[in-house]
Length: 184
Image 1 (cartoon, rainbow, N blue to C red):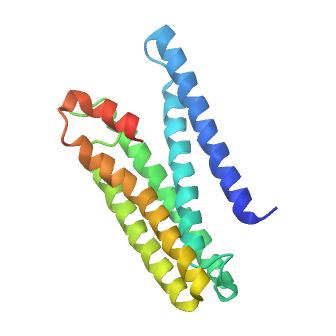
Image 2: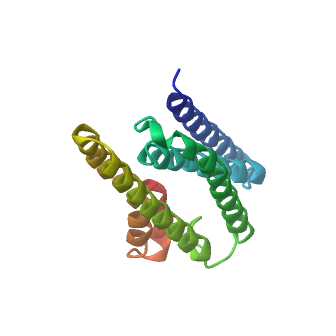
């Protein structure tokens, strides 16, 4: 089985575990009124790791992994970069959970944490665009056509969070949690 399939499977499994942990937290919340804070934190960390897995895979493919033979060596650089990105995301989730009960906070990505996540997503998007462009320059006509479609799909993925984050700011504070939850 191809490594890309394994990475996708890992991302889906992590997402599923995040959903199970969150659902368990909500069922517990229903009965005791406070839930299980550890499961809530775990679900958010797993959700972020799932997104990092998907993002890393998009960037790897954009760099030419599985598309250009000469790019295989860059995998050695990408694995530590993906690990650092995952650690930063986990730290942001932890910092966000420390501020979780703040009275001014209407959703999980409110305030500084949300703006940092927005900035990181935009930086990763720029990296993705650069990677697609450099791979397209090395490839032939068929590869350029594929990468044009891939760029569009990647743009939709990378720009969804910034669009939802900014759209949420247009709503009254008491609606923001619902808009953010439905959008993500």
